[in-house]
Length: 115
Length: 110
Image (tube, rainbow over all chains, first blue to last red; front, side, top):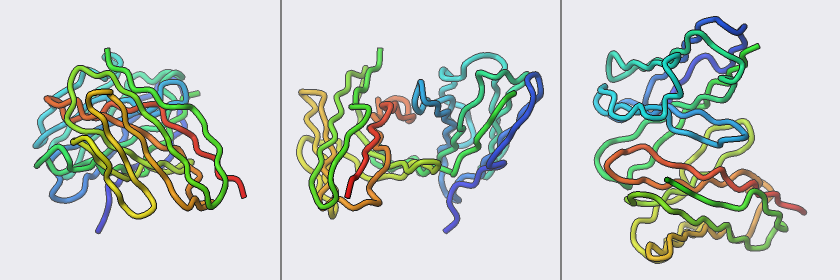
């Protein structure tokens, strides 16, 4: 079975540029999550969707960050304009929304470096 | 606020047993997850507890005490491949997202 697929795996760009991260959840999973991981702050939830609808975006750091889920098999996280402090590993995860015991399955992450 | 505490780093010997503790104070609770994360890789699911007591799964066991806001992950017969970070995460209910601790970096020595 294909897991959660994220692209790109690595991104290096200059400050001020727009960055778009992509995620394809596991087929049949109807909840999708975006996390950010840094050494200082650990793994933090940014936003999540149920059935393609954003439910909680309270973790999105500021207006420069936006996320969309146009259909059940695709989501994007966009940073515009990017800043050096956005450098982190960004993970996408998905799960079946049919009980709290269903684990989230993580993609391999996008390692983002803003110069 | 939400608070999940784990030791930053632990060291153990191959073949031995290690217990990784996690304490939490959250506004809601609908279960606690343990994840394993090898360096440069994605977190992978290990266990889930929602009721008090011990859940055993092979070499790994996880314990929960809801009244104490406490959990531990027990790893037996340690192998070198168990060197990784172990993340404790709480589902606070109402929202499906997880609140993670900062993880415990476990080093296994020969």
